[in-house]
Length: 105
Image (cartoon, rainbow, N blue to C red; front, side):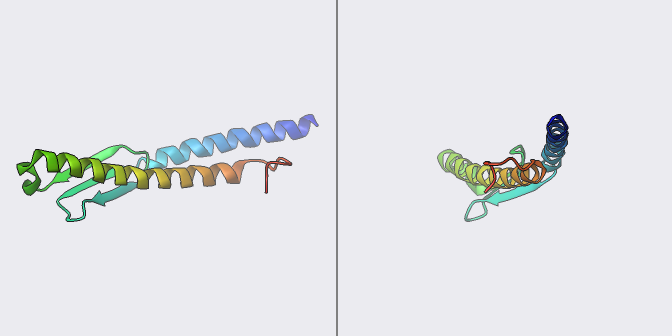
């Protein structure tokens, strides 16, 4: 019984280390998003850190339009990054978790 428990604990620690490695790797995964007319472009990491924002001069003439573009485009980029992040982390975690009766389908 204790051998199984120790094995499970070891596997959990190994999985935790793999999750941390994946989080670090996701810092280098870039997600690009742009407005429908390509006047605003953003790049963020899969860990949702903004790397670049490119604003066309046309948008600088209208503050309200620029604000709207930033909100819409950044939210779309964050959504994509979150989907990538969650998929990567859950795949690593799922592979490393021990089979616990009643928790697997």
